[in-house]
Length: 94
Image (cartoon, rainbow, N blue to C red; front, side, top):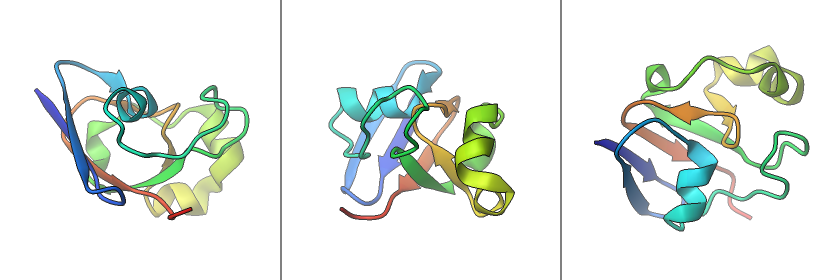
């Protein structure tokens, strides 16, 4: 079982297998902000605080929106990030 802690909202969710971080946030009311959910707008940016190694590799869309510096700091796009293990995530409050 995969556990995702949404630090900014204080919520926690579980998934039985690999899942999109944004899809889990929407399903479990995790609170990650988004507009398009398709990697076009870049609004679902979030920072992986724990468990960076439990995500699929960075996608080309993430590289375009975030750049290498933000990726190195742990920023990802929730709609593009597939969670494969336990993570803790935060995002700038609205």
